[in-house]
Length: 121
Image 1 (cartoon, rainbow, N blue to C red):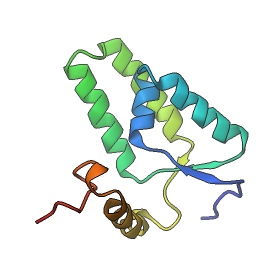
Image 2 (tube, rainbow, N blue to C red):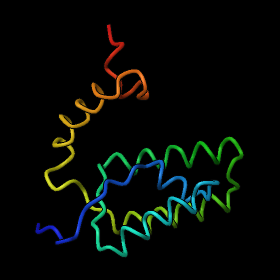
Image 3 (tube, rainbow, N blue to C red):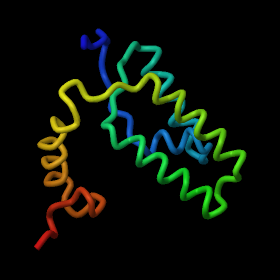
Image 4 (tube, helix red, strand yellow):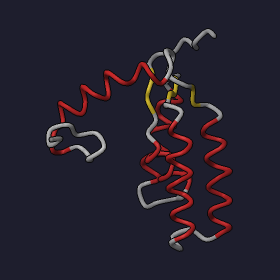
């Protein structure tokens, strides 16, 4: 599969998608960032887990009442629309392993527990 030529590339985090799709307070900022990257011709990438992460959070928002059933349905439509233009990593999800490990070591205690390796015993 050939990759699109672009001025740059950005990895889209599931938190950005959830913010936009569920219309969180920060969603205009997140949407503007994606719009800016689009205008510059940048390519969007995300690991496959982005779908499960976003769906999990949106389902949680539905179950805790943060989203109504109608808002949840609208969020899913928006999620599908955004996912349609997000590509998988060029060398597969496995290629992200070393970089994720390196980031976990760099950020240490300030990282979420799933990333930080500083306090593992």
